[in-house]
Length: 602
Ligand code: AGP
Image 1 (cartoon, rainbow, N blue to C red):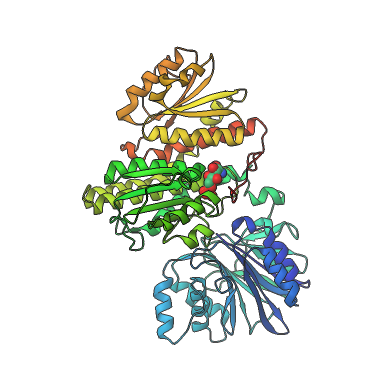
Image 2 (spheres, rainbow, N blue to C red):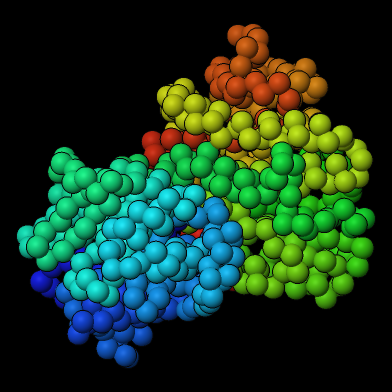
């Protein structure tokens, strides 16, 4: 997601646009730009990099001198972060900034090229401004309405027409957009934080509504140019709270963003009900290596289980800091998959370079566009979780495992291990998970209650078998990194080989038991720890009968009727358990001690 702003009034537009964009950098920060009316013309200044890089450029070239303009901070979706792909995009007569995704931009681009138009960038946004120009014959509203009728997808737009100086035209469809109202000033913004420093009063644009901000005032119309009488709202929270959209922490906000993140990530990888990775065929590789760090590594562990189970292809999963030094037996027949949210993790980048040196093909699964690993990998699959601000990774993990599933489905299909119908069913089941997660997030209280039992804990175990073991790894990391409670994950069957000696009275054990095939064995392991005084929190499928002598607390997940995809749901209570425990301990949930969001050093 990107951030868009606009200002029309009597003060220095450049300064207001930059200050407003600073409040939206949490929405995206790989490039930025402004367009300001200066001396009757539209002047655009934009650059790759963070807002600070744009400010540095403006201090060199001089900022545009005007009282009306638009601005943008980008989270790249179409086209890598670069000067030419940054917004605003323009023609000789029109400039726009855009937040959202135009789904039919390719078809429209072909049409415009046939009309003799040329393009500078790889973005879908440039298609919009060219469409506006195509329809523009002197009436901005007419050009806008005709263009809107052609676009499919989500967007919020800020538009300047050179023939209408000091006037901003703004439109919303899906992507949020507000119109701020100040003293002799009006604003547009993707989110309230951008305008709070100037005004708390704003109109909320609804879908297909058009706002016109001019020196003579602000009006809002529908698609038939009927003037609308909108309710003026007043923000009742401060700037910092606004950036979290009312959530107490970025981590909780990002947990809630997971349904959208999964949908946005898997949809482009599904065509006609089957996995389609832009034509990339991974079936020719004899062995897969999945290499990553931390949570990304744990997503890889899920990948190993599901790919080997479905596609019957051998998968090694390595912690990057080990892979890069253990002289791995990697060769030209192998595919090395690097998973990384930031795309900047030093050990993962070094592992990528080693794999390429050893002659393997490399596939990067990355969340940040244009990051180092994304640029150096042979093949590239982006996840679309949006910016992940909290150090503890949540939405990045779930989109990583959703890609693991699609990869497993495709490999199983092309290797004739499952039929096309079975593959379609698996894909359909994956596509149901966002809505199910949405419902799970409506009932967070059960987890919040259980977390109160962990607040004074010094040490605890997470245990599970199979995919439940893979989730116990991620659950344990989530808890330890933000609650600072010592937590270890063990395969439930491993306890007897030593760890069970650590069990003391009332020591919590989080037992994950969602895999029907392994349920009885996990229950046996739970009884072993309970017999030694452990306090058991079990995570299992709804309607599972749990005897009182097995668990002290039960956290249920909906039953997908296919255990293979349970990880998509199991991770939700584990994330919330860590989150609420950290909150109850009064820790800095988003910026836990000793940690950084991206470990760019060894
Ligand atoms: C997870 O909550 C941590 N923030 C950390 O383990 C993280 O997953 C790891 O550093 C890998 O980061 P990356 O995905 O950006 O490579």
